[in-house]
Image (cartoon, rainbow, N blue to C red; front, side, top):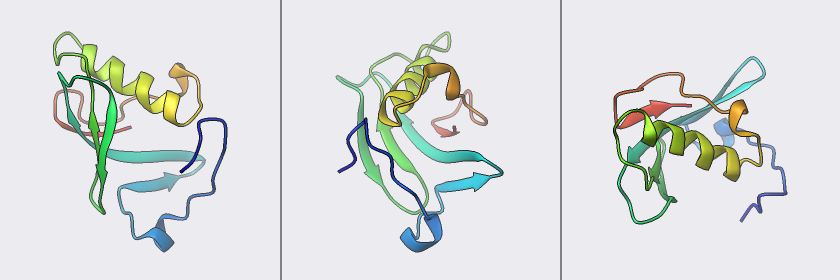
Length: 95
């Protein structure tokens, strides 16, 4: 398990995870999100997407904000380093 203070090199081709990829110097992740959860957590990882449960409701962008905060925390980044590239109004997102 990677602790929040550690870093790891990710070679998505070796892992068979098409849900994690690089474009230039940016890392992209495909997420399948379930809002209104009891707590923020990673629910699963497969080749298509990383499953996340987010405690915020899916209204007024609250869940999207929660996704960015949670992903930033996991990757040990600042919140402003993480943004949603696609899927602002969908359960499937690219960050």
